[in-house]
Length: 166
Image 1 (tube, rainbow, N blue to C red):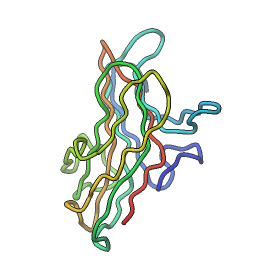
Image 2: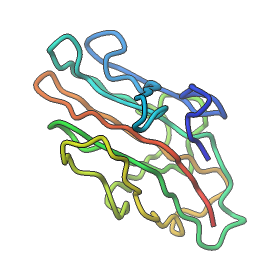
Image 3: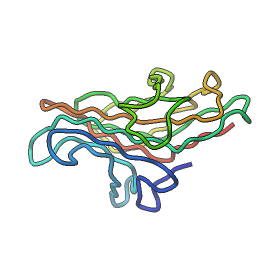
Image 4: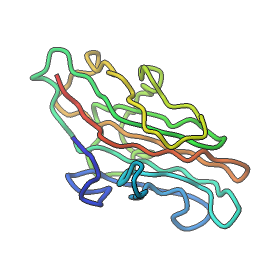
């Protein structure tokens, strides 16, 4: 479970990896909006009236799914503005510490998520619904949210209340 209430992206063994054209623009960060969603994990490549190319991964700690028979992932998400959709990956051979763009076999499970938010001009978090992880039962599993922004556009994504359960 990860809810970002402690104000940290990396607490509990989570990792944050970023590469881009302008230092840290687009990196996953804690964002707090008063009375709306916060604190949440936020990725946005928009700064000073410009978009900047970037790739940013927020990676879970390794966890064991062999004790589960029907595990699933659920999380809250919201998006605004035009740009790439947020992507979700799972790995059964990630080492737990290296840059995921360079290590581990990552399977794109973005399409497994029942409900991704679409830009309705609101910042209301929506539930992803239960994302079935039964096909990925293994002793050492990690999930990762991957954000991509370009120099010409970039959506803003917020994620919260990440839960893996039976």
